[in-house]
Image (cartoon, rainbow, N blue to C red; front, side, top):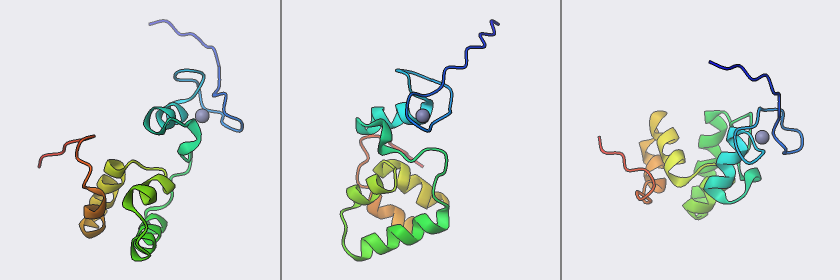
Length: 107
Ligand SMILES: [Zn+2]
């Protein structure tokens, strides 16, 4: 194993994570890959699940489009569906489960 101690950090201002690709860390690179914008994802501090559920419940109640909701929370539809389902909120998760093209999850 070669140990290259090159501490290149993410080029996004304020981000101190190591570079993964394209000058961005894993999170920012992931944001760029998923959304076409490295800043589309909130890095470092995913919202506590309680806040997330509250936000999602509220936004659904005001008939915000699920796609927008997921985006605003920094998730893809599939990722948000998964996170909600994992926390026993299959009822909420169902709203985001329409897009099965990205990650097919057969039980
Ligand atoms: Zn970064």
